[in-house]
Image (tube, rainbow, N blue to C red):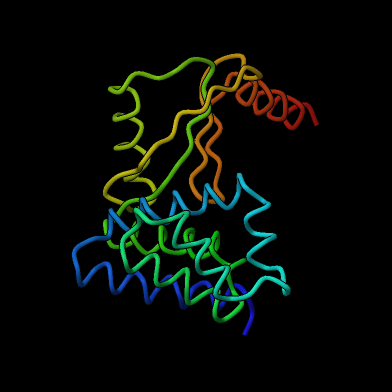
Length: 181
């Protein structure tokens, strides 16, 4: 079974457990923390994937490192060690977030701007773009991009909405060149 398929199955199983226990937000947060720990600490993943480290040692490391996690997430991590799939943690977290967003009718998006946006501006963007993509809300993350001259860019999944000044100038230039021909 491919890594991607396995990650989706584990995420879906964990999502159903979270939904039954009404703990979707909690498990989503915990999985994102685990993902961050694994991505910022490559040595941990190296040790957990090393064939000479015993499975019991790997489980002890996980139990000590993630003692504050819920039993469901911790058990999933231990199961991943047993099945030699600990490298799928990041994919599991990403898939879990997708399932949680579908359940809530929301989507994650990134807003690139020259300066930090106010909460009211983010809220207005969320409601406007949520309607465009057929969702009830957007969870926006504001990223400062000093390369923008002005305006904003919004990335929702694999779609980018370019409302920047440079993007508008490029579109105007293409239009003028097309009209000249």
